[in-house]
Image (cartoon, rainbow, N blue to C red; front, side):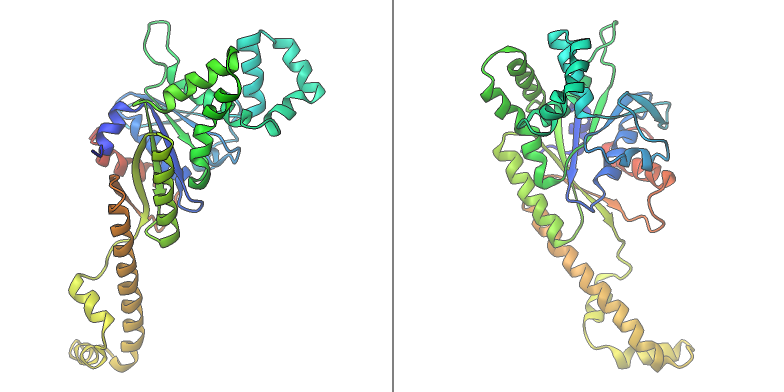
Length: 331
């Protein structure tokens, strides 16, 4: 049984957003964080790839390794952001589990930290996912959660399953001790109803195929598939009858109609108009085929509009408003 975005948004506290490069996954993750922060809620938007894409979207300076408020959502909600650095996360880990504050910094000078985060298999991803899951579980002194939702801008679809599931591999290598318990704790969050993994795509063959592969890999790893978010959907400017007509040879009829409407030199206008209409008809047909492929995945799919003016801060809020409509949250 598939679960819609409304239910997942209400239940899942960790929203993981992935997608093929170029589909706008970081933009969608940022808009989702804004949407979930409505009505006074607090969300944390987490970046794990070190690209500082979140800072660029919110038109702010580069994010440090600390949680910083970057936006206010409609209704007074707050969006915080964090760029997780694997090296700093490992120092936190050493201090938390081994009380190695100064000693951890000494290890950094010796190059041991760099070795662990770049060469040791799986350690880097364990640290990145672990930091996000810690934010999901963190509570205030009064007992409530610090963040209502944590939104992770995750690696691309082709790597996201291994990224999220690497804790299982580490747990298998370390049979006991803090590393084992840390990996198990992270996997309990990632494979629970607290988490939903959303995949961003375009209505194009390659992104849709990668989305289908990603859904299959997530299911095989027993990771919770959320929704498919179809980004940058262009409007249809022709109805179905016009699309069918554009696909055929209507040159003479269109010339007569233009002449009847008083258009100057109608014969010269027919060619460019037909070419443009035919291109639109082909695009509509291809998009219809990709929607059929997505429908076979049996995953709820929701469409976000193409912003012709580009995604600036105003565009980000516009996408958040559309997501709120899909989520059924706020006005």
